[in-house]
Length: 133
Length: 203
Image (cartoon, rainbow over all chains, first blue to last red; front, top):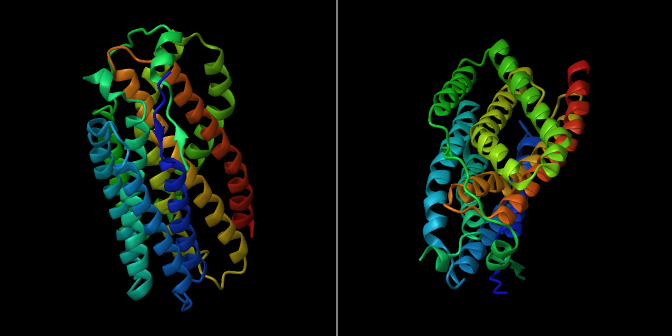
């Protein structure tokens, strides 16, 4: 039985999403008061680090079904960019400005990249490139 | 630091492969309905009027809750007892619809809900029930992470598997279990949402 060993992309991706959600809750819970940004910056930085780690780990998997990954992930990226754009619009509509806006925008970028990556990974992990060839 | 991919060769050998009916992974006609709902959400946020925001938040939230509970506790157990061909037949008809329904319902609920909270002042930290509002953020955040990390990828992956010339029943069963279990888990969390939202409504 040939088994492909894969990095824990889903688990790391969920941890990354949980960190930006925590940062968003932290900022939202203090509205409209001035809020120290350091905890949100730390959570965002950790989330970005996990995203980068996930990309690197996946890039090193030999024989990964990249064609299947990108075939799905690019459309998912389009869909999640639309959703992220709607959320960004609502932030701008509510006059979120300065540091909180920068952190929330960067969090949305992590969200819009990481979710399509998880979808593409889940599809590609069940695709055997050898069988396709 | 590694998990194991499904053993494709063994799964294929154990379970008989069969053809699935033709279908669209993303039903194109349904995209029109999605566009209408999202346009309505944008218009409601731009107008910042109470009734449209409340309508979209209540309808979206009720739909989200009911779908999660129904999938997890009614459809899930039924699906588990169906034969593999019946599971494939059912999945090819239900899952494409879920690809459009769930992200749309969740986006509409959360976007309209946030703006409603801004309009009513319930998201402000000086709101007297602020602790309950923050609790709702935490529950919704947990549900979002589960839905985005597990449920939505499983939904898409099962459809891509069904699109293959010879779909692997073992892979479909594994992904459908993941989909139904995560829908059930978020359904349970929806009960917490109902408790919080009714508390916020009555004060």
